[in-house]
Length: 604
Image 1 (cartoon, one colour):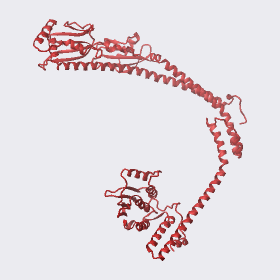
Image 2: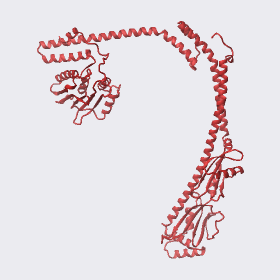
Image 3: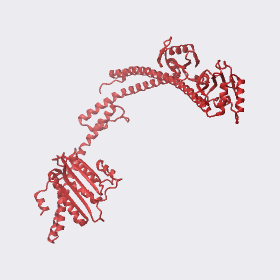
Image 4: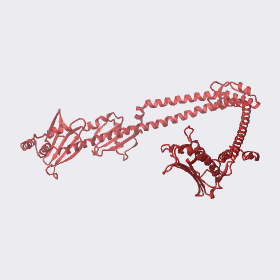
C-alpha cells in the first residue's frame, strides 16, 4: 500500500466500521439489559409465587397429617376397652358430677383400673408435632372441651368454652365415635382444633404479601400488610384466575397467586409487585449492568485493535502477492511476520501465503522423489515375476525325475502344486465356478496324499452353476481353515464336504466338516472379525479376506455365514447372487497371462 494515514480514523472505511460497532453495541446492550431484566423479574416473582404456593401446600399437608393422626387415634380407641368405657361416660355425662358418677360405676364393675380419656388425649395428641390445641366432644348430652394448659389437661362442660378461639380457630378434623356394643349407634363426634397462629404464623419470612381468608371473607391470618398491599389482596381475591398479573392504582404491575384449601375451605392469596422484586434483587441487576459494560468495553477495544492491525497486514499481504506473482519465493520467506500471527483472518492469510511459498519451493524435490519410488516399485514387481519362474522350473525338474524313477504319485503331486502356484500368479481375476472347484480338487488331492486314510473329502457342483463367473482362489483358503482349526491328527476319520447348487436365482456353496468346531464363547468374536475386521494377532485373516473379496465382487445379495453344526463340526455357507455384480472386472494385483514360452516351461 503506497498511500496510508498515520491516524486510524483517517481511513473512512475503518472510521465507519468503528463508530458503527459502537452504535450497534449500545443498542444491543440496551436490548439485552431490558430483556434480561424482564426475564429475571418474571422469574423472581414467579419463584416467590411458587414459594408461597409451596408453603401453603405444606400447611395443607400438615392439616392432612393432623386429620390422619386424629383418625388413627379414634380408631385406636376401639381397641382399648377401658378408654372406650371412659369415653362413653364422657359422652353421656351432662356435667362434671354425672361424669364422676359414671366413672365410679365403671370402676366398680371392672376388675382392672379404669382409664381417664382427657389424660390419654394429652399424652397422645397434645405435642409440638401435631399442634392440636383442643378436642371437643359433642353428643346429645352436650358439649365437652378438653385442652392443654400450664402443663396440665383441662376439661370443661361449658357450652360456651372455646368460642373466643383461645382453644383453636381451625377445625382440623371431625370423627364420629360409635358405641362399641352397638356399632350402628353413634355416641357423638370428636372435633380436633388447631390455631392458625401455629399453622401459618411461621410464614412471615416469605417476601410476599399474603392473607388467609375464611369462607365468609374474614381474615384468618396475614403477613402484616401495608395499605397498598391490602389493596393488592383485595384486587387479586376478585380474580377468577388462580394466578396472573394485575395493576394497582399507581400503575405498578403485581403478580398474584391464590389457592383454596380442600380440607378447611380457607382461601390463600399472595401478591408481589415488580418494583419491590427489583429492589430485593438490585445487586443482581447492578452486576448484570456492570457485566454488559465490561463486555462492551472489551469488544470495542478488541475491535479497535483489530482495525489498527488490518491496514498493516493488508500491506504485508499485498507485498507477498507481488513476490508470489514474480516467483521471488526467497523474498517472500524473508518477510517477517509478528510472533502471534494466527489470531485473525488477515494474519492467517499472510501466514498461509508464506506457507504456500515454502511448499512450492519443495514441490519439485518431492515430485522427483516420488518418481524414483515409482521406478523402484516397478523394479521390485518385475523381480517378483521373475522369481516364480525359477520355482516353477525347479518343480518341473523334480516332477521329471519322479517320472523317470517311476514314482507317478509324487510326480502328480508336484504337477498339481505347480499348477496351483501358476494359477495363483498368472490367472485373471475372474474364472468360472467350475474352474475354482477344479483348483480346490487339486489342493484336496495333495492334502489327501499327505494325510492318507485319515482324510476323506467330497466335492460336488451342479452342472447348471459351473459356468457362472467368480473370483479366483477363494475356496482353497476356506479349506485351509479346516486343516488349521478342525483337522484332528489323532482321529482316523476327518471329513470335508464342499457342495455347490442353484438356489433362489443364485448359487449356494456349503463347506462342512466333522471337526471339533469353534468354541461357543469364541464364535461371536469370530463372526465379528469376519464382518468388521480386526488388526489383532488373534484375528482369522483368512475368513476376513475371503469375505471382503467376495463382498466386493458380488456386492448386493452376497451372504456368508459360519457356525457349529448340531451333529458336530463346523460349517461355512455362502450365497453368490447371479449375475455377479463384479463381472468383467480385472484387478491390478494379478499379472497378465504368461506367454506361450512360459507355458511350455511349466508343462513341458
